[in-house]
Amino acid sequence: MTAGLEQFRMLIGGKAADAISGRTFESQNPYTGRPWAVVPDGGPQDVDAAVRAARAALEGEWGDVTGFARAALLRRLGDLIGENAERLARFEVNDSGKLYREMIGQLTALGGWYHYYAGLADKIEGKQIPTPNPDYLVYTRREPVGVVAMITPWNSPLMLLTWKLAPALAAGCTVVVKPSEHSPASTLAFAELFEQAGFPPGVMNVVSGLSRETGEALAGHPGVDKVAFTGSTATGRAVATAAAQNLNRVTLELGGKSPQIVFPDADLSAAANGIVAGVFAATGQTCMAGSRLIVHESVHDELVDLVARRAARIRLGDPQDPATEMGPVANAPQYEKVVHYLRTAQAEGATVAYGGTADSSLGGYFVKPTVLTGVSPESTVVREEVFGPVLSAYTFTDETQALTLANDTPYGLAGAIWTKDVHRAHRVAARLRAGTVWINAYRVVAPSVPFGGYGDSGLGRENGLAAIEEYTENKSVWVELTGGTRDPFTLG
Ligand code: NAD
Image (cartoon, rainbow, N blue to C red):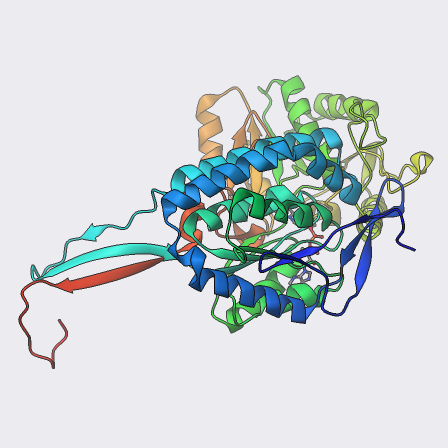
């Protein structure tokens, strides 16, 4: 049954592991529609074992590793991910149908994240703090928050894991990862690099599992100190609720409905290019998809025409082919969801400028890149995250209205402003309620730049110096300097 399929195993306490139950599941390739890999179907017992291993590592050898030594390990890990980029990228393509050309780009860049956090691992400093009473020396220590549970989605498995893992390791934490059931392979393969990089056993543990019970067991595990999650807003709420039972910290990177605001003075061909990058790249399956086009009424028709004509030329096909620009939707439930939104939009009166349907000519889960006009701020397709290649265009008449429309969403992950007016660009950027604003650009990220959301798009920040704070506790140490005693019945 599983002959000819690639086999993967979990990593627990530095050892390759099968599920305690012995169960496995098959991972499907959404382009071929066939299974290509077999992975362990871990459950709550496996999660227990992984959390115990992570705790033992924290209290053992890893707890004594200095920031300088962690930096060296992170540099090595960064090199190794680069050396294995091609293999890991192919696993991600097989699991998710994302383009090889995108995934090899991501995997090649990821070394930079480990190198950036290697540069910070030996610079995690406390402070000496003055107090009103000169008899005390007070200093702070930044200590690892402890065992971190990391739960990741299917759309960019190793990139979204790295945004958590690199700062967590730099801070000295240990980790249990639960990758998505739709794309577990690359995370399981990546875990094999830890021993090679020289990390002690148990610093990184991975449990794969088919049922949502596995993620639930990890999010609510009493042996965990923090939960870092990327995924849908609905699951994020469940994860935060489970973590709250343990009064654990959480970082949540959730969904989005990001606006692209185009003013009449914008370079329309650059804007059209940025809009295509924002919503059709990765088949629209990115949290930062710029899925709402809010365009000045005077340039609406011209811009929609430019975007629709480019959408019509997008090459759909085999994700492994370097000429392909858009692959299939990543899995059956996601495909059903996108098609449902296309039908709902048209039933609610949207006009299709291009696309609007699935593309059955290619087999698999292909959906045409879609440009919708005639939508209103209340349309379902404008309010809800589609997580597919669907752009909804509507108009504004002045800057105030543009901002009102852009901020009229429960989300707040990202957004873009297209204008040549430097005053307006910064004015609008300041008033957009979103964690990232691009001016005359879209979908650019870097290890050094914080990323995260307002509102329903999440909690906390990944990347940059900000992420180190997410993985450290701040301890204050008071040292009495005189050697004397004091009145024990008053507060010092
Ligand atoms: P999802 O929420 O269905 O699943 C995410 C992960 O959570 C998976 O590993 C899943 O197994 C696990 N999970 C499911 N139920 C759980 C529970 N009750 N407790 C603990 N874990 C549970 O999301 P998805 O479909 O894999 O990913 C798509 C979503 O992710 C989109 O909404 C997208 O916007 C969001 N996303 C956000 C970002 C970001 O950085 N903000 C990045 C990528 C994706």
